[in-house]
Structures are given as C-alpha cells and as structure tokens.
Image (cartoon, rainbow, N blue to C red; front, side):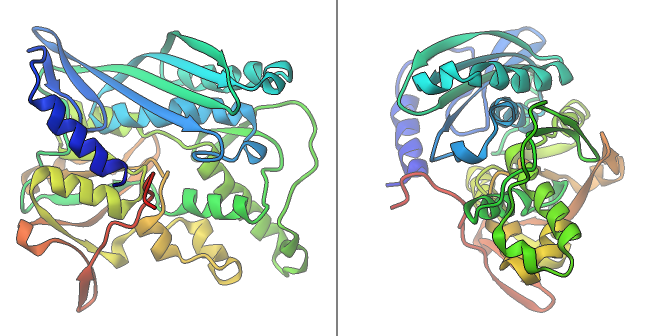
Length: 365
C-alpha cells in the first residue's frame, strides 16, 4: 500500500460518516473546498516537508526552505483556481538548528514570498524535534462554485501545462551528485533573482565540472536547475486567471510528476488522455546538460516531480480565450482528454504507448 492507496481507503471511510453540509470537496483534490458565504467558497491546503525525505538539509539553505514551504501550498491553491489570502506554518527543529539562526532565515524566505502574493501569516506552532519537519497550511478563496477540481475533465478537452518540465527533478539529481547553490538565492520570478543571505559562501560544485570545456555555461545551467528544485515558483497568477475566467475544466499541480498527476486527474474525472511527446516543454537547462550529465529530458519531463507547474484542461470552445502568458509565464498545449477506454498514453509521431504513473510515491516499497 502506497500513500495514494491509503488516501483512497481513508476517503472511503470518511465519506460514509456524517459531515458538515458546508464541505463542497474534501479528500481527493489539491485543497478542500468549504462554503464560506452565499457568494464565496473557502480553500484550505496542507503540506508536509520532512528533512531527508522531502529535502536534503545539508543542501537546502534555510531561507530557500522557507520559500519552498509556502510555495508548495500556494501551488495547491493555484491548482484550485483560487486566490491565496492567509497561511499558517508549524515547524519542528533540532536544538542545533534553533541555536544557529535557522529560524530567522527560514521565516525571512517564507515572509518574502508571502509578501509577494499578499498572503498573511496568521499562526502555527513550534516544537523541538530530531529533524526539521514543516507543516504548511494556506487558505484561499474562490467565487461560489468556481473551484477548479480534478474530477471535471471531459473527453475532447485539450491539455495544457504552464512553464517547463523536468528542471526540478534534474536539480534534485544534481544535489544528490554533490552540486550546491553558489549562495542562497530566492527567485523573484523566472527572469530575476535576489540575494537571500548576505553571508559569503564558496561555490560548491560537482567535481566532474572541472574538466568540462563549456564550464561556465554548464555551471550556470546547474545553478538554475538547483533553484528549480530549491526555489519553486507557484503559478498563482495562472491559477487565478484560469479559475476566475472559467477557462479550466479541470486542474492539478505537478508535484509528483506529470505522469502521476495526469493519472490522478484522469482517475478522478473518469477519462483517458494522450500526450504528445514532441509538445512537452522541456526545461532548456536540462536539454543543455543532458549529454554530459546523464540527464534524460523526456523522462524527467514525464516522471520528474516538484516542478509545481499547473496541468489543466480546456474545452475547445474556450481555446481562443486563453492568454498566451500570465506573469511572463507561457503555456504549452501537450495533448487531449480521451474516452476512458484509451487509458493514459503518450504519442511520438506514429508510435503510441501506455504512460505509466512513475512519479514519486511515499511508502512505495
């Protein structure tokens, strides 16, 4: 039994119990939906980050970890088509981290991202623990009945994805090979960065870089991929546009990997899908490094997790209304929703094959 099997079991157990009539959508989506007022619904999302499972402590500057802790929950609200408003965060820290200034750096990164999206930190909890453990909660709003669910895709809908794919998973592979960010930085957007820690640090690099003829370009690509993993950019603007303009028929954020998250969406909607391999927006830095770093761009795009891009479907009648960019981030048309009998498949020219769900799973054995 993996995490998704258990979630399905828990969902069945809770659905049989008497619950509040204000619950619009409970277990099974990126966020729970509650009826808040006659014209507004409330969205609540919760995420855990556990050291040595969800992040490598020695490779993750605390300011970047604070940024990521909030970013992953903002991405869930975006995937529901909502506007984030409030947050809570609980954190467990070892005594050594507490005494080192970790907490100040963590909340500096957290609050910088919160300020960027107008999100207020309203509470949480602190505890001593053996490892760093973070529980992030974000609360948002949507117009009544406008939350975008995973369960509402229909055959014929077109499949889109924001941004690019595979970069975060490549960044994780590079971290595991010993690569490190030159200095802790938090990306303010796709095209700019700001220093997140004034303390000077020596560049940390994979030792194999020294013999590369294109060392400078490789190093810059590596740094960008590390930031894709350590400093993800939640697509809040796209989520708001797709929700408020009623453009998306269904949506999910790519946290476990495109293949797994597409399966989640199709399972919830009772549909199939076909993805065009040539249309996938491969991260350009992965493509740049693939020949020398044993990175497979297509495999990372299909199965790599933590890109936190939005995967969404659009009815053919609304395609002309889709903006080309929101907040400087473009979208790519990557496939089509099909009848459930087709399953989830990927196509490259005349060749078509089943796309298994090979993204990340807790307790997968």
